[in-house]
Structure formats: structure tokens, C-alpha cells
Image (tube, rainbow, N blue to C red; front, side, top):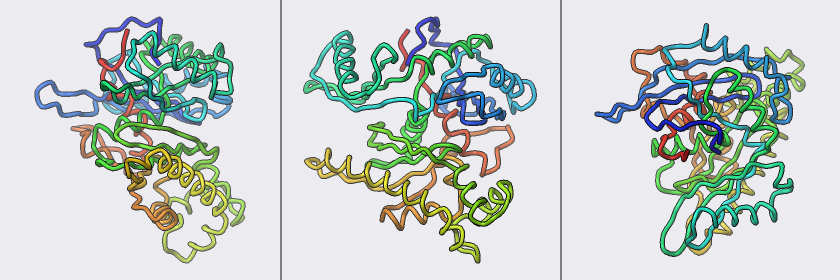
Length: 359
């Protein structure tokens, strides 16, 4: 979703910004004009109090503004030279729907997505920003992704960034950023995949087949797993977090006890992934294509034993997404393995090609 008020300078760099549940991450990635090598110019993370955001809307911008200043003044590794920003929105508070329309002009496409949104999105159009992204186009028609987001949410982000003297270029669901990174690195291969992004508060599930097709959200993430462990095993949240990272549901003397207390959330997640697989199978029946693998993203996906559990339950190969062989940190200190996954969304925004965005 382009920011209408912002002038567009295609030759200027931009940086990616991911405002999460309780922390924000920023990253700028430079591309060599000669070798085309991607390298991180700067990155950083800064925590903030979760009450700054309510139902996706920034209600206490001063808290997040302070976190942004903290990031740039104290927490930045390397440098971010641009004021232009591509910013993610929480996928849980956006709507996405694949569409296919006959060959038509941009104005006609806008009319078509408005009709689609009126039919399928349970929110008045006056409360939404609508946009679309074309995934395939030929003489037979145009395949595109309709994306809608609450005006209140987008405007709260826009107001915050402009107050910080930043130039927002685009807003998009966080899962779209991870999808762009998948496409760049070729990590998904040529077969359809399920992308599972486990954040601290929510888990996004998307179907990826050379492009993002559809996304849904489970209102539970890494923090709720930790809370289940803490309550079930009668320990503090900090102790449970350490236990989750150290042992998780991998083989250990605590394995079965941990599985027992977090099983309700794991079963819900598996059920939602299976729904996405069925959705794809029904629509791809004629092509004979099937989901070939699960790709996990986010801090929650690093829990020992998690990928193995999904693989066993879904009977599909399951692997964590590691794009850092394609993107170099150069001379910068490389984040520890447990932190790298937190930068996936910011990196996906940072590699946005300015030519993808119209003025």
C-alpha cells in the first residue's frame, strides 16, 4: 500500500521497519550495482511496552517513537542512511484474497477489487485502504492479490513515521515481506509451500507458490507457548522462556511434560495449517500440484523439536527459513542464531525494489 502523500525518488535507498508486538526491528540492505550482492548496511532492535499498540493500532505513539530513537541512537549496528521506509503491518489486522480477472486497465482492476472486497471482507469499504499486487499476467487474464487494511491502523503508522521525519513509501502485511525474501533466495524451490511465521503474539500461515497466495492468522505465538509452560510446570515466565529455548519439545527428560502443557496450542496450529493445505488442494486439483513442504519463520520456530513435530503431524518436510546465505552481513557483527529470525520481516521490507512501487 503506497503512501499517497510521499514523493517517490526511485534512486534513493530505503530501509525496512518491522513494528512487532513489543519490539521494533530495522534493517537497510544495499545492493552492489556490479556484483548484485546484497549486504546489510545496518540493523537494530529496540523493545517497547506492549500497551503502545491495541488491536493493531498505535495508540501511544510516544512509546514507539522513544523506541525508534533508542534504536538509532544506541542499538544500531552499522548505519542506516535513508529516511525512506518500507513498513510492515500486522498480518492479523489485514485482509488478503487471491483474484483472477480478465485483461483490463488499472482503473477497471480497482473497480473489480472493490466489488470483491464488498462481498468478502466484513468491514465497510470506507474504513479500509485497498490495494493489489499482480502475480501473473497473460492474454488469458490477470492473477492478483487483493490486500485491504484498516484506515485507523495505517493512519496511526503513517502519523508516527511522519512525526519522526521519516518518509513512508509502502505499508504491507508482514507475511508479504517474508514471502518476498523467500522469492529472492529461492528457498521455497519450485513446489508449493506453507509458510508459518511464529511471532511473539500471533502466528501467520500462508500458502506460497512462486508468490504469496493467501494468508491467515492464529491468535497465539511464542509468548503464549511460554505462558502455557509457566502455568503448567509452575514456574516463572522467565524460567519457562529459558526452558522453551533450551529444551523445547526436543528429546530430553522434560520433553513429554512440555508437550503435554503446550499441546492445545500445537494442535490448533496444526489444524489451521491443514485447513490451508485443503484450501490449496481444492483449488489446485486440476493442476495436480500439492503442498511439498513447510517453511517456518520467527522466534517461535526456533524451539527445539518444533520443526520435527510439525513434520510428523503434517507428514511434510519442515525446515526453518535461513536467508542469510544470500544476504551478507559483511564486516558487521552477525546476530546470534536465535536473533537472526527476528529480522526476517525487516529484511523482506528492506529488499523491496523501488520499481515495484508506483508514485
